[in-house]
Image 1 (cartoon, rainbow, N blue to C red):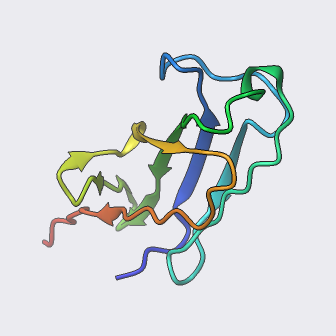
Image 2 (image 1 turned 120 degrees about the vertical axis):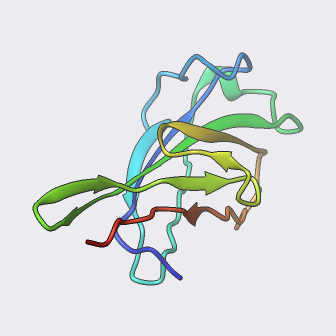
Length: 117
């Protein structure tokens, strides 16, 4: 099922996959639509990206959503990599993008369970 109102955060990273690239447009946030979709568009001019058209750049993407159920906050659990890896909250996942790469699909699953009483 599509999951609306998921908070998406993204950051372009250096090759070490840990250090954020510090520039305008290198980080940001999005919220998923009613259908669970989101778009991230990069229009970045930074010297670290020069002459890298043939190289993939790591991007960390994180997913979070909190739902209030019976006056309790439930943090959603998200799975990536075909449902195998927990990518909730700050864990996120790293994807790799290259110059002029469009419409890269990213499938994320909400694996949240809510106890019934």
